[in-house]
Amino acid sequence: MALVRLENAHQARLVRLLRDDGPRSRVELGDALGLSRSTLTSELDRLVAHGLVEVAGPAASRGGRRSSRLRLSGGMRFAGVVVAPDRIRVAVTDGELNVLAEATEPSDVGDGPEPVIGRVVDLVEKLRAEVGAAELTGVGVALPGPVDTESGTSAAPAALPGWQRYPVRDALTAELRCPVLVDNDANLLALGEQHAGIGRTFDDFLYLKLGTAVGSGLVLGGALYRGATSSAGDIAHLPLGEDGPVCACGETGCFEAYCGDAALVRSALDAARSGRSAALADRLAAAGSLTVRDVAAAATAGDPEAQTLVRDAARRIGRVLVGLVSFFNPGIVVIGGAADGLGHILLAEIRAVVYRRSAPLATGTMPVVLSDLGERAGLVGAARLASEHVFAAA
Image 1 (cartoon, rainbow, N blue to C red):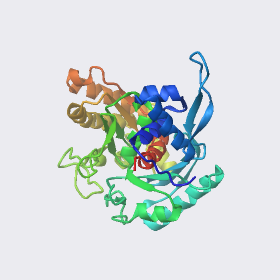
Image 2: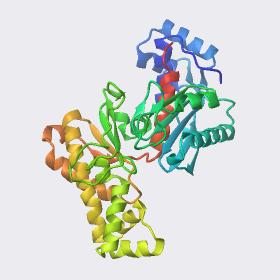
Image 3: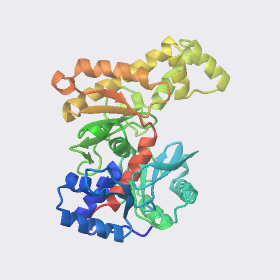
């Protein structure tokens, strides 16, 4: 569909409500936004005339003549892109950010930005054609590590070597011919949870991203909080010990160096080679290497040493969360990104530390839970980022 141009704040509020809550009657829209009947009618008629809103069928009767329900245009299509260190994930959504098609393929960010961005374009165009969209309304992109959101570039040389100041946003805008927005992956995971996950019912929550790269996204007062220079939530390099393992950033004892996937694998290799874990030693002998999934499988199968490694990492994660919870006082903590099989082992230990070490006032009603969206949260959050830009008043 043609480039979306909203004329005023009333229209922006209307389309965002239809995005977030789905089809609504005129009466429901007026009640939710507090608009007069004449203003509501005028703005909706203009949105319909511009092809941004359409009739979705009859509304439930309230007595008298039945009105129609309205929804965002069925031709509206957003794309969400997640660039991870070892893979690319892409999805195309409708205007309400329901995923219509998605694809994943292996990739190595160490190859540099040009080949990775080229594959992103190919995958987006493939999915666009698959869903029958002539063009996209907007595209959101999640990158690991801090992002300069003003320029749409990576500001994380450790997470994305060779990508520093590469114009990710501008390169994709030129290829895909629609608005493109770029942000940190943890921020967009939080946005995805806010839109379609357990964070939907909370105005203040913290998303903790585990995995290859560690980070967090903060939603405060119902809005994503980025900080003065878009680096809020960048917890990967919080120092946990001066004599700890060397981190990819060059420092020692960083949170990620202790609790990221690479740290778990490093500890697992040591356990396998020293004979402390028969399960990990057998796997190493068979495969020649270990992955975080091997650690998860061994821990889930009851291997004591693998369980100890996971619980040690969980206790460190819990201690970091104690500080974050005490400072931000979120309504809920959502944890995602752990390898399959690790989440519930980590969660039990993290909860124990957080509830034992935090002030009761901060945690008395605060759940600590695993994400129910999984990796799809990043795709939905990226599409949501694009829609926030497109659905802003002129």
